[in-house]
Every structure is written in C-alpha cells, then in structure tokens.
Length: 191
Image (tube, rainbow, N blue to C red; front, side, top):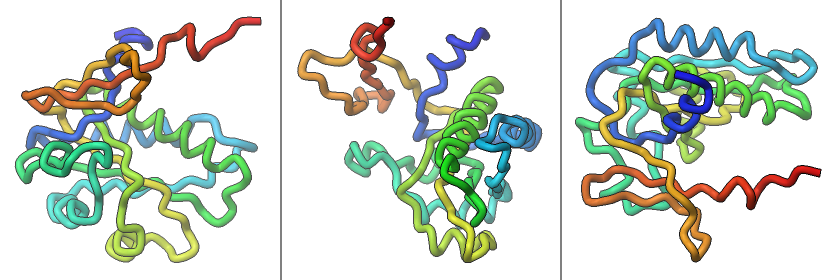
C-alpha cells in the first residue's frame, strides 16, 4: 500500500476483534518511533507496551471512549475491547518541543501498526494516577496518552464535511464510523 492509501485507512477504531496484536507488530511500531525525528534529538519519550491479557484487562476501566458519542454507541462492548495498549510518557527533561515529539511518535506508531492491519485509538481521557501506579510510571514522568490497539471490527470512512461545517464523526446502524474532513482547498494555500 502506498503512503496516501495508508493514511486514508489509518482512522480511529473503537471496536476490535479478540485477535491478539502480534508482539512483532508492536515491537516494529515502537522501533520506528524510537528512530523517528525528535526535537533537538532529545529522545525524551518512553513507552510501556501493555500486552498481557491481565494488564490489558486492568486498563479497560481506566480509559474513556468516544466523547462525541453516547457510551452505548462509542464504547466497545466486552468482546470488542482492544487487545493491547501503548502508554506514551514524557520524561522530566522533555523540552519545549516535546508535544511535537509526542505527535511524531504517535503518528509513527499508529501508521506502523495500520500497515500491518492493526487499528488504533488515541486516548487522552485516561485515569492518569491509576495507570501510572498500575504500570510503574515514575512520579516525575508525564503520562501523555494511551494508544489502544487491536484488529478492527468495524469500518471507518472519510467523508466530505457537511454543509453545516460539523466536524463530529458519526456512526451508522452497523456502528461503522464516518469521519468528516475539510476540503483540501479550504485548508491549504499556495503562495
């Protein structure tokens, strides 16, 4: 698949099959994040791969799904939950560009996973104190977000922005997702 095709398919997924994410896929994604660009080459991010069934079970009540949707639609049922998570952590020496580094790393992780058929969901609504305690994240470190991973059990499709300009994603009767995107001409200027 070419890069554009990769980005078209690399959407947010919130329902997954019970098929485990292969460890090799997670290792490759994290290796790609490790070698990706970093502001001032600071390399101030750390990661925790949550992959054991027990650890993944422990994560489920510590994350909140799909704030734009009612929980009965946006929250995966027990048999639709992700089978892995990656925690993204900033160390105390993270500099002024650390959130740019987080963006680069997260993009690298999710596109690497998608290239292997693994979907993802970036999660910022997480119980930071409890996750830090459960997974041994140092007090001085900043848990920035969690990435849920799994084999997608639904479709997620890019659609044109509606006339009213609403950017909120929505689902159909099959719980497949539709993600409105602004037109290229509305966000890009060449000078």
